[in-house]
Image 1 (tube, rainbow, N blue to C red):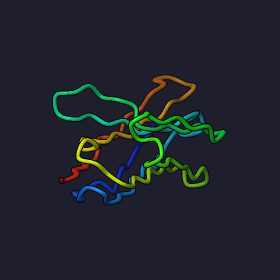
Image 2 (image 1 turned 180 degrees about the horizontal axis):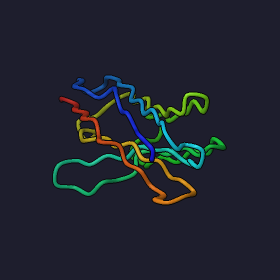
Image 3 (image 1 turned 120 degrees about the vertical axis):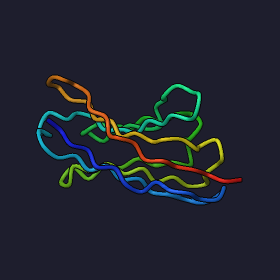
Image 4 (image 1 turned 120 degrees about the horizontal axis):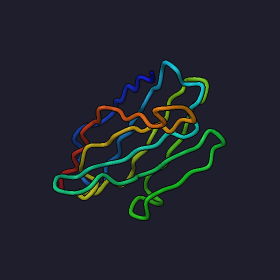
Length: 117
């Protein structure tokens, strides 16, 4: 079992910044990647950014240059620094971990990010 605790969501004006955190605990030895996804109302959940244990990163085109994902392996925590936020960044942000053992994927409960224009 893996437990994920997310924090850092909230309401911010366009152009502002937020930092999301996701701390993993439990059977974390087989985690190979951590990431953030978001889901806007009426839309599918989509990848925002991900980072592997080796430090390789991936970003959605829409957030490149504005968001930065980082990871503290000692704390088993992944961060998402979001700058220059836009109203279209609004949604529920979910932390996800990928593992080498079943059930292979865990999702956090989500944290709301609202960007006002």
